[in-house]
Amino acid sequence: MRLKLYLTNENGIINVPFNYNHILSSIIYGLMEDIDYANKLHAKSTFKYFCFSRINISQRKMIDGGFISKNGKISFIISSPDDRLITELVNGIINQSEINFIGQILKIVKCEIIKQPKFSSKMEFITLSPIIVTTKREVDGKLREWDLAPSEEFYRGIENNLIKKYLKFNNLESTDKTINVYSNMKSVKRKRITINKGENTTYHRAYNMDLVLDGDVDLIKFAYDCGISSKNSQGFGLVDIYH
Image 1 (tube, rainbow, N blue to C red):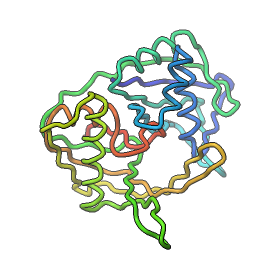
Image 2 (image 1 turned 180 degrees about the vertical axis):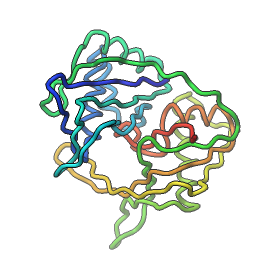
Image 3 (image 1 turned 135 degrees about the vertical axis):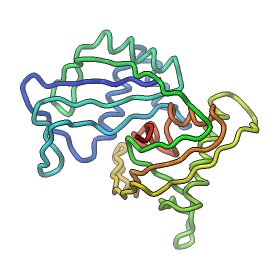
């Protein structure tokens, strides 16, 4: 299920930094009604089963370090296959009229439940937030996380990650469901990403791109709800139907 949040600054413009994923992630946890639930979810070292989009700024101007929303309006999408998580967000939003976005008090104008598309066994998607696919490679005698570019290894990584998440979410040991992922390379743009986690900062290569998912409908729906590849709860891998 997906929610779309519409936010506004009644005082005018909104400043949005280039790297805001950790800010949105923190806001999402803070919106949940049950603080205990939010804290336990945040502390999990495994999959968290939610994802969110880039911030949509309809009237924007680039400035040093980010953008300005000239009309004081922004929006973004939150997606999850977990009904409890979505319920926590909806109930929390009902009880909160505003959020703090890096010192700017934004009013929650609307929370819209997005109608799900009709899923089929072969669908083409476009990213609403960039995809990161990683592997382990030996560098100077040590195994290090390595970001992949679109390639066979990249697509197989997406497939393996999706099935692993699907099995864990549904408490399954195995499945005969299969998926094949590839791109027609209609719209591929590399993006350098900074991820802040506590005092640590890491840099990644991510990709905004088109993807085709061909296979089991349940897996395709799960990918739509949960996000593609890794770091979904940090705002990576949300997709929508390619139009």
